[in-house]
Amino acid sequence: MIPDEQITEIKKKLIEHLQNTLPEDKRAIAINQIQNMSKEQLEAFLVQSKMISQTEAPSSHEGAQQCVFCSIIQGQLPSYKIDENKDAIAVLEINPASEGHVLIVPKKHVETEDKLPQSAFSMAKRISKKLKTKFKPKEVKMLFSNVLGHEIINLLPIYENESLSSQRKQLEDEALIKLQKKLEKKSSPKKAKKPAKKTSKKSKPKKEKKEMAWLPRRIP
Image (cartoon, rainbow, N blue to C red; front, top):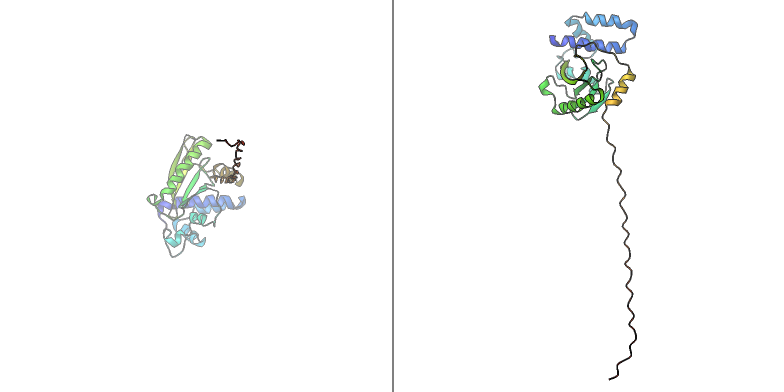
C-alpha cells in the first residue's frame, strides 16, 4: 500500500502530467477524477498505468524501477536536463513553483534524505550559485520531497514567499528550452594542442683555417 503521506504528492504529480499531455477539453474531467480518488482507487490506477507493480510495494526495488523519476533516469520520459554526474541528474521542473525551479534526482532509487549521495548535494550547491547569478532571487532554498519512494532535492529560487505548495506555472516547451540553455552546464572546449616547434639544427659555420703568412726561413 502507498503510505498516506505520499498520496497528496502523487496526485499533484499526476495532475501536472495530465496538464501537459491531455487536450484542454478532456483535462478538467481527468484532473477532477484524480483529485477525488480514494487511496485504493489511486493505487489501482497506478498499477493499471504500470507505474507500480501489482505484487510489489511501491518502495520495493521492482516497483521503484517504474516510478516517474526512475523513468526519467532511464530516458523513458522526456526531461530538460541541465547537469549530470555519476550519481544524479539535474532537470527543470516542468511546472515550477518559481522561475528557475530545478530538481536534483539521484540515479538510484533512494527513499530517504540521509541516503542521498554526497555528489547530489555538491551539484545542488553549484546550481544554486548559478540560479542566484542568473535570476537574482533573494535566496535559493534546498527542499526535499518524495514521490513513490524516490527522494529528490528541489532547488527553489525565492523572490517573494514561494514554497513547494505555491501555485504552479505551466511552462511551454519553448520557455523550458530557453531556461535549459540558460542553466545547462557548458562543456569546456578542449584546447587545441600547439604544434611542436621544429627545431632546425643550424649547421655551425666551419671555421676557416687561418692562412699563415709566408715567412722566409731564418738563415743562421
